[in-house]
Amino acid sequence: MPATRHTLIEDVHALLIGTSFIAVGLTLLKTAGLVTGGIAGIALIVSYLGGWPVGVVFFVLNLPFYIFAQRALGWTFAFKTLAVNVALTGLTLALPYWLKLKGVDPIFAAVFGGTIIGMGILALARHRASVGGIGVLGLWLQEKHGISAGKVQMGTDVLVVGAAFMVVSLDKLLLSILSAVALSVVIIANHKPGRYAGY
Image: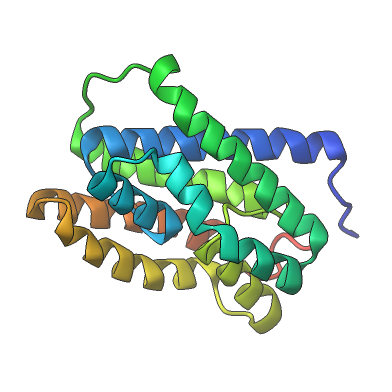
């Protein structure tokens, strides 16, 4: 059965849902004092060190990846990725006003936060978009060379979460590793080469 492209309404809906999942996941992790992998993890680390809003840091760190996205995956992918990042910046700035969390269990934040971020990334990937960063590189490697995007994500996540020792205690570092694994497992299990062609 030939694959059909998503409609504009389907794309917009998926990008909004995916971005919302990621924003909620990041909010849970930040409330629990945890990090995760990828550019999101780097943004959380920088946010802890400098006190800057995580969404703004995330957007700035992604600037070089927009150029790579355009050159490697085309204008449509790059535009969607930029739109996702603008929305994500806005959502992460607004969520503390909309979702007032006094505290969250760190184990729940690690497992659920990592998983929901992974589901958000998956929704974006299925609609030819990304949050940028390592996700863009992973999707390009998967499309061009058949290398699992989830495995690329997990490999870089190990490095990013390992760097979190500068800002989190050992117990939170271990939970941050759990979060990164939860995120990567969603991508490894659900975004395999050739499984969702024609999007």
